[in-house]
Length: 190
Image 1 (spheres, rainbow, N blue to C red):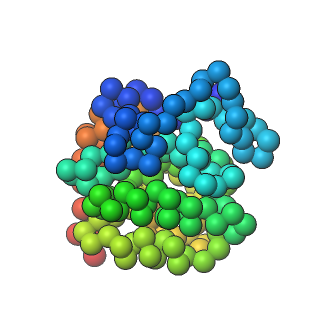
Image 2: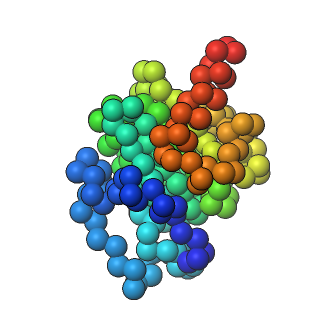
């Protein structure tokens, strides 16, 4: 797991440690010391803790004017034991919601497992947004299926065109526009 790095080619556009509105503003990364781990497996120092023992994040890009954020994940999303959605909602989502972030792109290709509980935090998150949406990009099929078993797909858009394998080749604004277009078409169908 220590070889899995968050995507860093967008650092020229956005650095979470240099964003005065970020909860990680001023964070200094020690790339000589691997201190964070998931189930005893060390992870790359680029990943940021949000309070969970099993799920880490990297905020890849935030656009306060267009009200969107792109967050990459690694680990096991465990709502049953660790209540990971509570940590995500209280420590990250609520923070950025105070800056009017309304659209959330969650990149889940490094989420290795999901254990669900109830959907109350997801529902609260969804209701907090006035004109926004939450989307999961590149979540593994079995993770999506498990999330559907707990009704999470009522709040997070998954699958289909949202499995964008080449997202790293896009600039963050172009990636957002692509996702926004897909979600707009899905909303128009209803």
